[in-house]
Image (cartoon, rainbow, N blue to C red; front, side, top):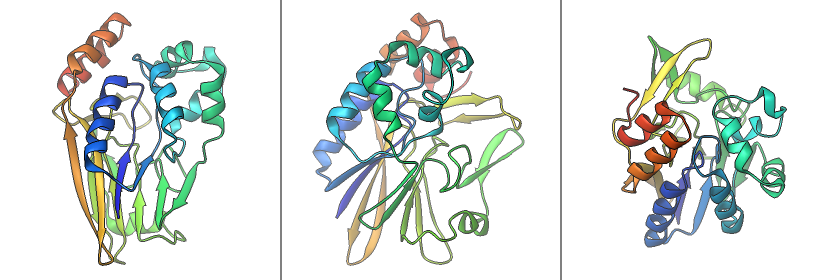
Amino acid sequence: MRVAVVADIHGNFDALLAVAEDIKDASPDLIVNLGDCFSGPLEAERSADFLIAAGWPTVRGNHDRALIDRPREKMGDWEAPAYDRMAPAHFDWIRALPETLAIEGLFLCHGTPRSDMTYLMEEVLAGRMVLRDSKLVESDLAGIDANVILCGHSHTPRHMRLLDGRLVVNPGSVGSQAYSDPSETPHLMEQGSPHARYALLDRSKGRWSVTQRFVDYDWERASRLAKEAGDEEWAIALATGRMR
């Protein structure tokens, strides 16, 4: 069995199309989406139309939730530009998304099973995301009856084998390869290149292997769109995979 896993598209339609083409060539049996589909200064409406038509099993991310759980005037810098480009049918689709999903022996969540705002495999140390202790990850996954857990949120391609034998996989981000988080624990995420990211999982004889895919696309166009929208930080991140 082959599964393609995408996450954190953030309205980057060019990156989404490139990843979708790469996935098509890989001929998976299943494609799943771990959320945060639209927020950002790019092409939320085109991304929404594509995902609705594609019908991929999808869970709701924290940025998806922020598009439907608060009024426009209380939205952040990532949500407001996307909200202004989206149609009622797009918001209806978000409202129908589950927070978590079990499918084909896989468990899907955006952050952790109980929080779309918490990194599962990372923690913040000195302004950077670092690998968490596997025992803490196992604690967050208590009660989850699946051999493979898929998560997003950190935009960081990573897979971890837990002591109990379970596999945790983050496919990285399709559409956002660097960001600055100004939360209570401020930190940076930088992948160092602008390539769109996703993962392929293959099961053979009961065992899973993981391939992290980095896909070329027209990130200069995406960067120009962000700059035209007045978001210089996004423009730099899209063009370089860095925050500076």
